[in-house]
Amino acid sequence: MLRHLTIRDYALIEELNVEFESGLNILTGETGAGKSIIVGALKMILGERASTDVVRTGAKKAIIEGVFDEADIPAIRALLDENSIDPMPRLIMRRDITTSYSRGFINDTPATLDVMRAVADCLIDLHGQHEHQSLLRTETHLDLLDNFGGLGGLRATYQEHYERVAGLMQERQELVDRERDLQQQKELYAFQIEEIDQVEPEEGEDEALEAERRILENAEQLYQSTAGLYEMLYESDGAVNDLLVKARNELNDLARIDDAFETALGEIKSAQIIVSEIAKFLQDYNARVEFNPERLEAIRQRLTELDRLKRKYGGTLEAVLEHRAEIGETYQLATDFEGAIERMDGEIETAQRDLSEAARRLSAKRHEVAERIEQAIAAELGELGMTHSRFEVRFGRQQNPAGWIRLPVEGRADERFAAFTNGMDQAEFYIATNPGEDLKPLTKVASGGEISRIMLALKTILAKSDRLPILVFDEIDVGISGAVARTVGESMHDLAHYHQIIAITHLPQIAALGDTHFVVEKAIEDGRAKTHIRRLDGEERATQVATLMSGAEVTEAALESARELMVSERSEA
Image (cartoon, rainbow, N blue to C red; front, top):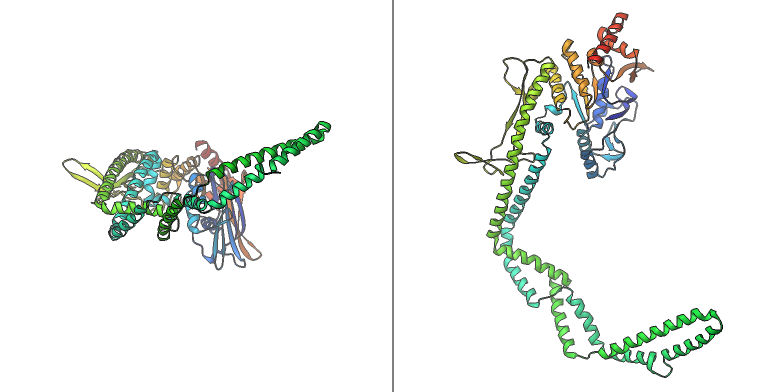
């Protein structure tokens, strides 16, 4: 929900702070007081383009900031992560506008207008008398239908099959695009494969051979040095081992006299053992030293062959082997290109068959859900005074000879349809508001009063499944009055059980039902007009409702009527 809105130096607003509540928030005020300015400022943090004219005269920049509670939803988390924006306990959206530029921020991190719009699309639906509303965008109708019917599981299954087909089609196209290059490379790769396979290199072979070469080349030094060291440590007169034994015996005698020598005795015993082990290792190594000129020459020749391959194919033996594996696969593909295409076509046919079945099941469920929505919305419109209205969900499909979706038709060839990420269906809401009228697309309904009631009917029916937690209604009640206004107010109040609603209204029947009521006022201060907003409580609310009923002059009779309206409206709501 939108918890806090701050506006500074925007149009007539010098500084405005408002704390909204859950439920139905009502904004009223005289024409020209600045209600629409507040909505305009709100649009700025929703990503709408800004005019530099909105900066208040004499100010350097306008600042609009909105703080949202309960905005930690998967779609927003994904958007923040995708754009490297840190999450916070509350979502903060801010817009700075100067006379030369504007900048957007989300959680104090710079954000483009596209990102701000994407985040706002997950939070707020703004309905105004002349706004481009989400329900009046045909592309949203299918989403609303699926949300209402709880078809998320079927839709996710379809999307998995769609992505599988799309991936295979892309692989096939890449394979076809490579065919000419493959044929041109075939002879080169055949030569390289033969050259590498004749040598038959093995992983790590060069390192092992280098180690063996070093040993054979230095066999004489290894033999002489190990023999000399063994003699020094163990066999010669005054050998290290003999000296350590003598020292050990001396320390042993001293330790019998004074315990202080125990540590030194232990250490010299360890040293004597280590020297003995080293001497044994040297003796064993010396016995194994090999003088083998034939083996040394063979190693040198083998390393020369491996070095030649390494120079040509990557610099290391690992690179040579990787190159051999890569060109081997490519060569195999080049020699059996038609077979590879045929096998991939088989995979695609199977995947398209699965996609077609998923699309058929999803479409069938959508038609069932459409019937329920049609009946529910017609009934709701009747409650709103549009008793002769008819509502219909119309479906379409795009035939395409190369479409991924194939549906059997009895007695003739299968029909093919284009596949989209959300299915094969195209859906649009149609309505007729008067007897004898033809059904027309909802997007072409012109009457403001009808639009407001249609919007409320749709929102009321779809409320529990609608993903948008905040609804803003900017004087959509224009063109209605009397009993219809009362019914619209009740519907709006009921809708506020599922959404936070911020409604600008001029109708007392709607204002009387607000959970929270604000009045927007314009005053002349220091010779300049300024817009303010303040929350009304108790008798102030009754006075404001009375003002909406009778005009600027509020009589006691008007106040009494307002109090009765607030009581009766609330009790019936």
